[in-house]
Amino acid sequence: MPTSPTHPVLYTRFIAVLALLLGAGAVAAGCPDVDERALKWLDKMSHSLRETSYEGVVTLQRGKEMQVMQVSHAVDENGSSESLTELTGSGAQVRRLSHPLDCVHPGVKLLRSPTDGHCGVAAHYRFDVSDGDRVAGRRAVRLQIEPRDMYRFGYVLTLDKETGLLLRSRTVNHSHKT
Image (cartoon, rainbow, N blue to C red; front, side, top):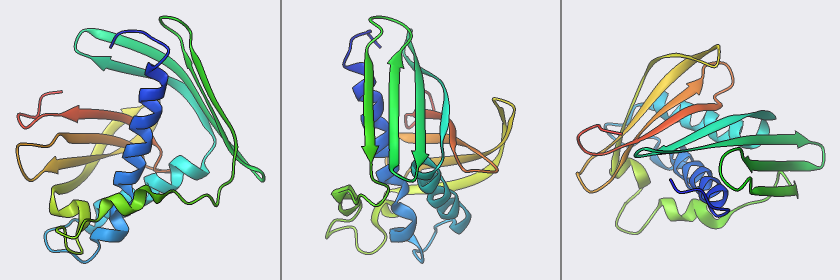
């Protein structure tokens, strides 16, 4: 991924889209051929991303290009704030301060369309849960999100077994290649 000040914004957008995808649990519950354990983990991850304070280093790789960023997310009685700083390239920084915890984003409505019926994103993806490798010294759960057709990307998410926080994410094509 080329280094430029816009890439921290792309990462933030990726997390936002992922959070919207994770809201699928409530929409897909009760649909046939849906792993209820996976939906519970998606729900736990969704809450964890919003309600847990964390900080760390994120590595984004696209082809042979790699970008490293410092990320922090703090939650207190006033809401949440985030900071994302490029550690490679220009050193660009994105900050979001004092975001209330009760803010409702309209993106959840994107999960359902009139043609999806009541299953939402589960109509397009299969979910599978298994034990994951340790990441950053934490026990983990592996969540595979596989498209039901060849026109969508899949995802392999590794979540902290205790908190549900996203520890690692890979986007994969229909051949399961990153």
